[in-house]
Length: 107
Image (cartoon, rainbow, N blue to C red):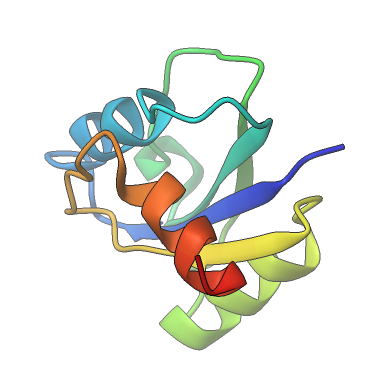
């Protein structure tokens, strides 16, 4: 079971997306979680390339999706019990997801 999904909409985020995904995959969390990047572009060759990881799923779309559509697509493609959203230019601290999960439970 996947405890949480982190959805990241990405459009023209090639400069920042790698660091964002790195920080999300480095979360200090004992529970299973996934990172779902919804990458959209105006052309196929503009889609980002990310290093494979079993916790990472990339959903692509050409043509570009608006922010709301990308978030909705990521949420509907998520497997987590909880869904968190962040932007493609955020570097999350290692305890970010753990603190969100604790807050959702009232801990």
